[in-house]
Image 1 (cartoon, each protein chain N blue to C red):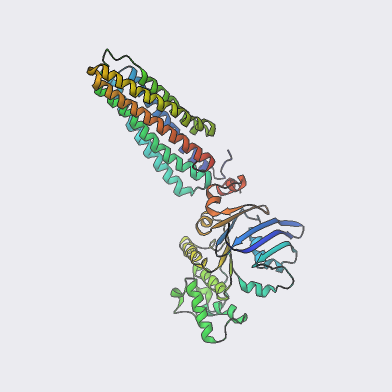
Image 2: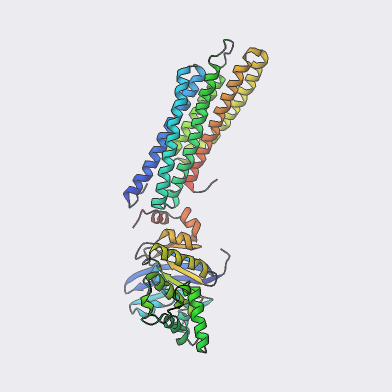
Length: 254
Length: 217
């Protein structure tokens, strides 16, 4: 592929104590594309996702070797401040986790602590922009002061996406963002991903093969800590080159 | 081949395959009987071939319905998806081949009997070659064999040249004996039907290869 590469992992090994969770992962993630990480539970795909914004730093027994390069910079070098790094990389989790605050404050929180805005007007503008971008504004515009937790599951997840967007990240990591949502809410999120990818590089972990096939342009298949195969999504789902990939996507291994 | 975790998924795919194989065998029988009619004209058997074509059409509809349900129910990927796509395609080709066999029988009904001066059996020979190559294509599907599938297009080249020979031979026969022009014209139409079955067998073999290697080459 000739496109620009946003994230590059070089020989990444991850250990949880004695257990090796990832083994020599070399993966390139192109700019402004959706990359889907698929594989059975425990294969290391979420671990890999969490390496990209150094979320694994918070786990004491976790040890990481190798390099993860975002925009030509190794994010594990001592000069990189993880807080600033995470401002550049937003994350959306499996279960929507809005703060127990108002809808407005949920989105305003990030920009405030990162000092992205200079005035209340600017802040309001940014909150509205983020909610619009996440496709939620029309549904909540009359109740921005209601609690974020009062929203439906799908709306909460979009609120979390709005919260991630508000700090104007370059990368959005999504860890099974639709697994707790109904099909309609899922469709809304997928539609949103199609829209977001114009401005952001997205990495999504999903257990739904069909979802990966629908939303991503590149797919990587992980199995037992190894990256088995990576390639264009249409190729992975129609003519995978590895037997293990084929067996997994057709439902022949657990 | 490895089995799916969901056993009913395997059952669906197996059932699709067995229905298609059954349809293929029915079509094979139809070609066999149609070719036989060229040698020995038999009105009641010809009517039987035409009647049996309905059963083949019904099987095509059944396979189509089943494939559609499997697609929506299982959302298949990779080789599973290709297997369903080729069943749709092959079943429609088999239905066409069935029509050609039925057309042969229809031509036999309109000639009723062979003139005494007509002694060649070249079209019958063509029919036997076509029948054999169709059976080869069907085994390639049944046994999922690229090697068998690859032999089909090669054999079709022979079939085409035999067809050309039949054509020229019948032109000569018609020039020599004006009384059999009507009969020979019908025989040439039959030869054309057979040649089409040959072409369609080749398409089946290509679908088999597509299923196995995943690319249309």
